[in-house]
Length: 385
Image (cartoon, rainbow, N blue to C red; front, side, top):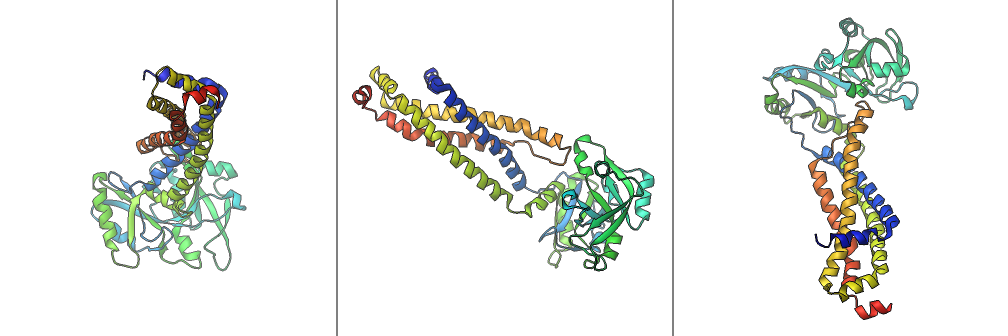
């Protein structure tokens, strides 16, 4: 610590260069903090302990059908309060740019989501109307829909009578009680029975079940019991949390962990080249100063550590600022999206990995300049050779 003022003075020798380099480091670790937090979230365990609402899907893929008859078996599992099912539809409203999630739901599905506020008379109409549909308030406002409107959707997967044209009657508009999650209102749900009867391909099949557990402390046992129902069959299931289920949707586009790792590898490779060049240039400019330090008694090893410490300090300062900004931005982005984008907080694992990377990159970019400074010949340096 007694040499900290020397290290700081070396960093501030060219304030503009240091500031620009620092901004590069801050940007790199800002990206790292946000992307690695997402990677950690996607790779986190799907442990269902403590959850009172779980999702049951095919063990093979969330797009793999499950028999609708499985509901009655799930409801016989001790500890299951109630269950319902849904099938992904994926229709488009007028233009692909207008896409929003839409799926068919079975009886009692809405009651599994008490946070979705739907007037009782509208819920009754939804259950009675064959072609009835309910939408979130945000989606209804976006398209100017009101109760009684006919909503046409173009099927992308399931045609009906050889046509992709489906129509639904809007009978209900629900609202999310938590304003922070109002992004979840951009969905449309319609009756599964109508979907099952009208589509040309899928019959008596669903894509997932939603299960409400009476005692959340028993959720792990219940999940295993549910999966045991179809063990060794052609429709084995996987019971998971809603978070893990949502992650599975995104994982269909590719290996999120691999994508994030590839992006960050490219970012840090560029950062090493940039900051390495900056450190080499900074040491070249200070050769006479380093020679003076040796002249007044600094050992070769002391000079080596001074240069290394300068590189590490540059990385650590910029990296901590970048991770700090990421920690501040992620909840703000989630809040601004009204729940449509749910970014996790920067976890401890990311902070620890980030600090390790800061030190490692600092050593890499500072090692060659530090070795050059250590081997510096005083006479040649002072003579400008």
